[in-house]
Length: 223
Image (cartoon, helix red, strand yellow):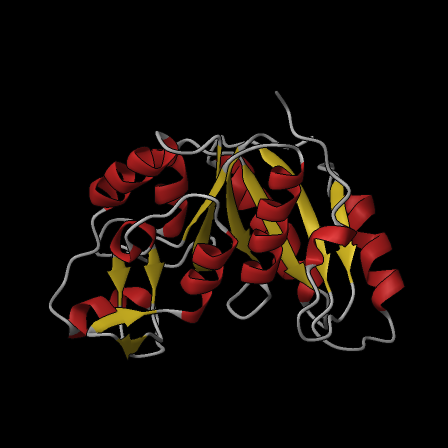
C-alpha cells in the first residue's frame, strides 16, 4: 500500500529514481488518481527554448496528468552535472526549501497524487544548512527508496533506511532496480528483504527502451 503523496530517494545518484518515479506515477494513474510529478532540484540541465530543463524532470512532465509550468515542476535547474549545492553556488543561487514547498503545495492543489523525486541520495546537501532529507521532512512525505542492485548496495541501502527512519518519516517500502545484469542479484535482494522491515514494492529488471517499470510495481494506493 502506498499513499498518494510520496518522496522518492535513492541509495546514490544514477540508481534509476526517475524510471521508478514515473512507474509509481503510472501505478497511481491506473488506480484513477490525477497524478503529477515533481523534480524540485536538478543539475545536468540543457537549454531548451531559452530555459534550463532536465531530462528526468521532462520525463515526469510527460507522465503527468496535470499541465504545469516547467518551473513549477523543477524550480531549481542547473546546467553542470554536479552536486546541486555546488551547482547552485556556481550559479550564485541559494536553493530554498520554502520555495520548493510552495510549488509542491501548488501542484497538490491540482492533483490527487504527487510523486516528488529527490536528487542524488538521502543526505545530499542543498545549501549550507539543509539536505535532501530536510526537504522530505519539510514536505512531510512518506518515502520510497530506490536501490540499484549492484556490488555495495546492501551497505548503501541499510544506511539509507536507518537515516530515513531517524528523521521520523515513514519508509513506505523499497524497490530493487536492476541497471544491468548482476549474477548475485537474487542473493542481494534476499539479504535486503531480511534486513529491511519495510516491504519490497517491486523488483525491476533491466528495461528495454520504452518499457515502463510500472508493470513490476505491484502496489495498492492507500485511500
